Image 1: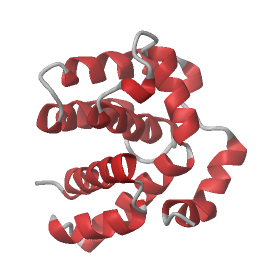
Image 2: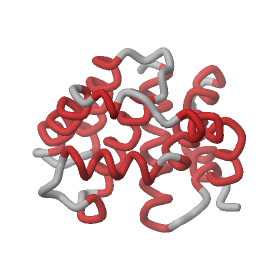
Image 3: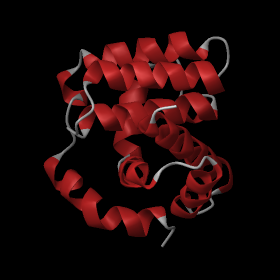
Image 4: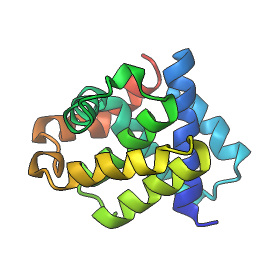
Length: 157
């Protein structure tokens, strides 16, 4: 399995735990990285993704609500909600992950961990979001805050 895919799985599991139990997400991620034997090269990618989702959760949830208006974010399946958060962050963060790769990886996570309808739902929401220029970037002041403040936010402090 590819390093980044393993890292995404670890992040999804950590976000799932955080969403349900409010455990510190960075501690949950550390355990998942060890459990899944993610190579060290994938750790920085995983922490950046986790910290970005945690720091930008409100913005990401607003984008989910905009593109899935029939489904209140808090009522979405926990897996679907966090897969969407992860992909929307990857799309907007302007990293080295192409748009189509971010969507494909999200659909694969939904196939593996979600319900039978999850892949189609995730693909539809992300397809709509990808067509919305507002979803392709993050506000500059919040992107800068994500580099340092995320670690504190993700650790639950």
